[in-house]
Structures are given as C-alpha cells and as structure tokens.
Image (tube, rainbow, N blue to C red):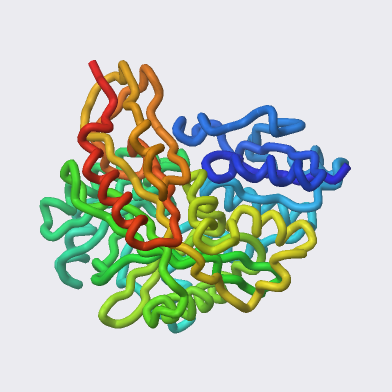
Length: 413
C-alpha cells in the first residue's frame, strides 16, 4: 500500500488524510512538537491515521523509522509543520520544498529581507530584543508601526502602534508569550505600517510551476479593542486590475522564496506603492472548511489540488501556469465572541440554515470552554461559509448574518 505522511494534521491539515485515504494511501501522522496550541490539537482525527508519531527533535531517527514504509511524500498540515516537513522530505528524498530557504519561509523578518533582495516592494523592518530598541527604531523611521512575533500565525499577538507607549506595551506582551505554534517569543518583529486594502492569494505549485487557486479580499475590523479582528474573506474575479497585479506579485514571491512544490497562502497589501507582502505560508489556507467554501466559487479546492499535485498531478498538471475562474460569489465570514466566561450553552444557529447562500458553518467553542471577546483568529465564535451565483441573494444573506451576531452568542457563567 502507498504511504503518505502529514505533519501536524490539524486545522485545514485534518482534511488531508481523508483525501489521501480515498486515493489508496496509508497515512502517518507526525506531531512536530508537544506544546502546540490546544485549539489546533482538538481538530485531530485519530481514526484517519495508521500511526501517530511524536517527533522528539531527532530527525535522523524519525527518517529511519518511517523510511521502511517508503513514504511517497510529506505534507504540512499547519503552519507549525512547515520546517519539519521540509527537513523530513529532504531526508527521505521525496518531492517538496528544499530546506535552503525553510527559515525564510517561516521567519517573517528573513522572509521580507529575502524579498527585498529580490527587488520586490516590502515593508521596512527591524528585530527588537526589548521595548527601547523598538521605540528607538520606530521614532527614526516614523509612526505608525506594527509589532508581532517572528514566526506565528492567525493574527496572534499582532499590534498596531502609533506612539511609544503602545509599542512598549506590545513588545512586552509579545516577549512574555509563546507564539501560536508553541515557540517562546525571544525577539519582536517591528515593521512600518502598510497602507491599503489587504488580500489573500492562495496557490498550488508543482515542480516550480504555479497555479493561482483564488484571490480574496481580506477584511478586518476594530472590535473589542483590537484593530485586527477578521471580518471575512471574499472571492474576487481574476479579471479585476488589482487582482491581476496581486497575482503577478505573488508569483515573484513564490520564486524568491523557492516555494516549488505544495500550497501557498499569501497575505498582501495593495499599498499606494503597489503590492507588498505581509507574509506567506507554505501550506494551505486555514481554518478547516475555508478552502472548500471558496471552491464553491472557483470549482477547485486548494486541499484537493495539494493532494493531487503530489499524487500524480492529473488535475493540477493542466492548471499550472494559469489561474482560477470566477463561478460564483463565495465567502468565509467570521462571527466574533462578544462575551466572557465559561460556556454553559451554545447558540442556536438554526436561523442560518434558512439562508440560501449558507453552505455550512463551524462553531469553535465547546461546552465548558472559557471564552473571551474575540481579538484574533484563535478566539472566534464561528466560521460561516457562503456561496451563491446570485450576488443580490449572497449579499442579503451576508447582511442578515451580521444583524444576528449579537444574538448568536453563547450563554456564559
């Protein structure tokens, strides 16, 4: 039987094993570290895997353990998996991104430096070990600035700062925490604020050739005291002039970071100077369900294409060098938590089932969980997936859901 490995099969990564098994693979799960966020681990589906291996930091031992099973490839399930996926794939000699630029595909400072060296537009930036260093740099280059961990995800500990006091508080908060993937934050990335709207560009690569799966408008709003609360992702038509510029820019990003095989999830600002990368991840878009929702508007699910790219490329091969089609309106809509306390009862989402555009939804908290008002993607109440060919129906349903968000809250004690 064919064998495949999924490292950290959590969040969107939980969708990989069922698709691999449907293609005749025995699937092994490898957990990259013991201290991953509980919000990731709860998505694990043990029944999908022939074996679960906890990685202890000994790469040669891990490679020796799995090599007799002759794995065909190694896939990353989540952001935390990117580094081990590259290293294990190279050790086994299986297809994948090589380790030469793995660090630049995870460390956001190195990522931007690499793009700048390749001649792409980037933010100005520094790494700071304390608040004084950060404030001194920001005073020199100008306010506002953004402070965040070097290698996290999901808007975890991202702060907008327009004065020294705010930046000091942000740096102290970051340095006293662990990032979303479990690593201690020992330095802080500080960047000049990028003006303009934010977008997501999702891709699939195979043998150094690329396919643009979708381009999404990424809308955030100020809520619960945070300016970085995700509102929605909305699919845009590829013919749009801004979308064309974003696609061309991201193709250059993929080349600069040598993302040759697998998925890419890029966040880009369309600034007054042109497209500028916020960050790119060498894995599929999250959270789980997002790629399926957007596929209702494009006809291709990024997770399906990722599996296909490593399993012969029967579908992906014909798409490489091109981009998606716009078949219907599609969106991932985030509902925030607006209350604090222990969840005693979950909200009834039955009203959403009556809306034509709603393709599904995922409620995040469980009974007994402690919840706090949403500040980032790790604290949302629910993700609602919408798609419809009629824009009027789609937008009416979207507004109806927003009107319900204060009612659709858990009962807490």
